[in-house]
Amino acid sequence: MLIDKTHSKKDIILLFKNHGVKIDPKLSKAQIVNSLDSKFKELQFNERIKNISEFNDYLKTPTPQQRPNTQQKTEIMFKAKKIIRWANGSYLNSGKIYSTDIESYDDIMSIYMWGDLSSVRRACRLYNLNLRSKNHVNPILSYEVQEELNNNKILKQTYSYELEIRFSTKENPIIISFD
Image (cartoon, rainbow, N blue to C red; front, side, top):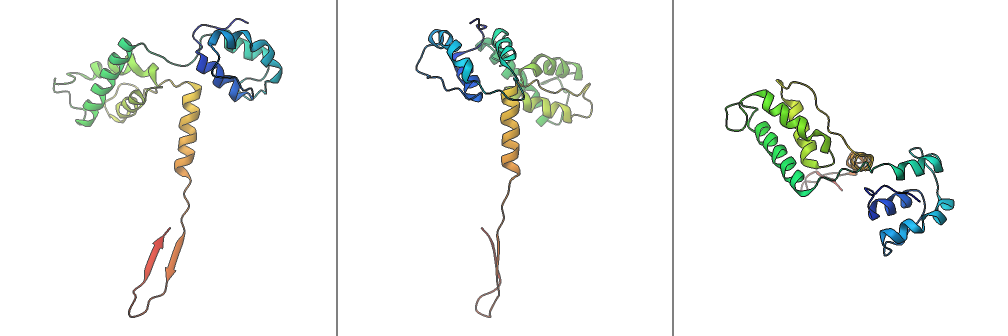
């Protein structure tokens, strides 16, 4: 079985778990790769990967997960923090952070592809709120992060309120409580 080297052990285990196959995490990546041929019979496909050939193609291509190295991550985080500070400072081009709008645009265009990082998503959102922004910039998200954000959005939208109203007497005024 040929698997692209960018897929980590954790990625492979999660991918198979999402398709109904349990893999022992105590095994090494090499042991997992060697035992995958027997696991293909147990796969349950979904709307994203519909058959065994698509599954093999997914494993042969580089992972869509975004993993910057430490030097890249420090540069990305610095630029994201710089944009966030600029946005919190009312988008002023006074020369302390940015002297022109083009500089902020160049910074956002250099980091938007790392949308799996929350600071980059926030920087893009704040940049887009600027009325003088050159273009609307959306961060690029991997499928797993997009799915997690959608699940979190659904959890935040579900509210359950219970209203209890008791009638008042002279000794006890009206009490309204939400539990």
